[in-house]
Image (cartoon, rainbow, N blue to C red):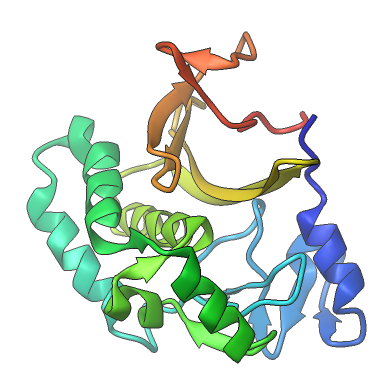
Length: 210
C-alpha cells in the first residue's frame, strides 16, 4: 500500500524554514516560492524532498531552458491527440535517467535552491526532474489555450520499495493520464476500476487515495 505523505513529512522536517501564508498544503512557501505538490501549479514554485536533497526551482520566466524545450515541443505537436505523447517523447529525449548525477547534486545543494535548468542543460535527472519538466510543459500549453486540462506533480512511496514522482494530467472532462518517463509509462487511468496493469504493463501505485 502506497503512502501519500511525502509533502507532510517534508513540512515536518523543514518546520521553521517554511512560511504558511494561508491554510492547506497550498499555503506553504519556501524562501519566497510556493512549494509544489499535487494540488498546486508548477511554474514559479519549488519542489522539496521528504528527505534532504536539492530544492528544485521551476521558473520559465527567470530561467531560459524550459522555454527552449517548449519551443521544440511546439514543432512536434501535430494535433491535440499527439500532445501527451509529444510531451512524453520530448522529456524522454531531453533527460537521461542518471541516479549518480542526481545524488551528486542533492549532496552538493542540501535544501538549497537549484533551477530545473541545471538538469536540462546536463541532460540528466531522475523521476522528479522528469515529472516537473512534463508538468511545466503541459502547464504552459494550458496557459497558451492549447489544452484545457491541467497537470499536477504526484508522488508517493511504497514501504520496502521506495519513493517515486510522476506527472498526472486531468483533461477537461475528467479523464486522468499518467506521464511517467522514468518508468516508461504513458497511459490513462480507469476512473471506475482501480487497475494494477494496463495492457499487461504493471504500473506503479498511481491512483490517489481518494
